[in-house]
Amino acid sequence: MLVLQKSRGGDWRESFLFAALLWGTLLAAITEFLNLFRDLYFWSLLVVWGIIFILLLIPAFRNLRKNYLPQELPFFTVSRFELSLLVYLFLIVIFIGIIAWVAPPNTWDSMTYHMGRVIHWIQNRSVAFYPTNILRQLSQNPWSEFTILHFQILSGGDHFANFVQWFSMVGSILGVSLLAKELKASVRGQVFASIVCATIPMGILQGSSTQTDYVVSFWLVCFTYFAMLLRRKYILVNALGMGLALGLAILTKATAYIFAFPILAWLFLSSINLRNLKKLVFISLAFLVAFVLNLGHYSRNYDLFKNPLGPGQKVANYGYANEIFSLSSVTSNVVRNIGLHFGTPFGRLNGAMDNAIYWFHKIIGISPNDIRTTWAATEFHIPSLSLDEDYAGNPIHLFLILTSLILYFFQQPREKDIGIYALLMLLSFLLFCVYLKWQPWNSRLQLPLFVLFGPFIGLIFSRIKIERMANFCIGLLIILALPWVFFNTSRPIIGMNNIFTTSRNQLYFSKRPTLADTYFKSAQIISDNHCSNVGLVMGEDDWEYPLWVLLQERIGKAVNFEHVDITNISKKVYSGTNPLVENICSVFSVNADPPETLMIGSIKYLRDWSSGPYNVYIRVLSP
Figure 1 (cartoon, rainbow, N blue to C red):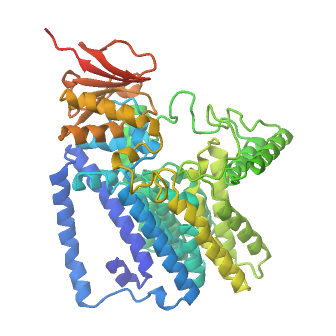
Figure 2: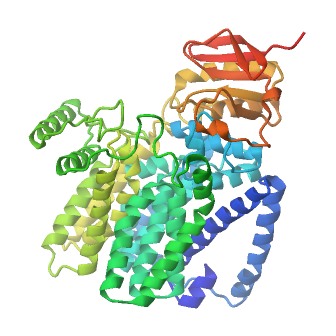
Figure 3: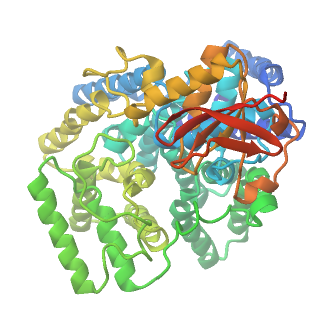
């Protein structure tokens, strides 16, 4: 941070963003390098990070001797109202950080593949692909889990797992204020932009989770900022910042391709129009940097799936991409994706809006549940107001976006750069609707759009001539955000099952509380048999991680999981560091119609316990 600020005389927030990009890139590079030697374990990571820390102390001490500190501290230039907003923002962020620390990872996806893949990497000492019944553990973009991997190995537990998203939330709050500054917003507009970002309901809920949407949001904020800098000034640092941010965004989540494309197209077309070869070179350099960052994951996906982007669908008949592209299909997706944010606490009102959207679909001649544009086995309905990180909408922020667009349209004179920025965000949303099927949890995937609209909203509202009206609207955001802070469905601060009065092991099952006793019992049976090498027979969406946590606690030593009875393409993969099938002493199976015995290779396992589809098998010893 200090080096960049000293060389460019830039804003301390810009230095923060660039430092985050360098750290994120370094973490990915360390992971891929140690992966070559299957050496991802405690001492290797401790030594590597220790050396890096010592090397960074040298320039840090030199700069401190010169008393080189950030000169631009906005806290001294804000009004009392804006300072109070920053204080409330700080408190919201702290509350979310407390939740992230106290509560364990417990989102559905974390229990299946986010945290599941981490435990396999830890036991394999490698991020190489392995045989698994859950293909998402292999194909999905891995940067967030790379970071959790480092935290978990070095700390010995998962207390820091949620902080990847929390740090990304903090970075996004800083980043959107800097984007607002780049759009010529005053300090007031920059503070407003930060408040808008910090109060997004979906963002508040995800800020204490191990989902990946806030992480990709942060990298996209960095990407957008450095892309804007590159357009203004063609220098290597801007191109490098843009390339690193794009690469890390893609390495985090595939939605980055969609949200980044309009900005990339805008940069490319403007450079062609200007016939600026230097700019084309820098854009090409950014592309190259992004590609190199993703080369390891691309190659692993290509080796197994013959596609660098993975299998292209979750399981058979569950494709992510729309199967038709027409005016009616795109219009349907636009309306339905916006409809996800219309949810209210009032059932009748939700039903009325639901009926109106179904009526509208009759007019445009397409079903709102057309299987070609809709995630399989789901139906469109206006959701109720949700406090769940998978389904929560952002109704107030959607209203602010629409209001800001109207205010900009009537603004005189209209500034071209601000209009272009808003247009690029709208094109990103349109591309999202064109490419991706509608899903009930699409509001989660749209988080980057709401974050990136923050600078635009903050700028427009800071220019409203009636300051009290603008102050009221922005201040109201903080009050309206409180239910999502305190009553998070998975990690509530207040209530009977809050995170302070509920055991950490029970909190893993917040999404599926009826499953807790089953997993506790399964772990007890396996540990009573002194088994630390466990076979897993499960489906694509079954929970793996909680069983590992419970067994680690009971057995007191490393527990190894090996997926067996695999029917998908990953059965071709062999990893010499995984426990051999012959060493498996128990099998945890999810099967609604379980057999009395299992044969894994030539070894026989007898069912010892069953509860619904969940079964524990114990190895039959040879006489």
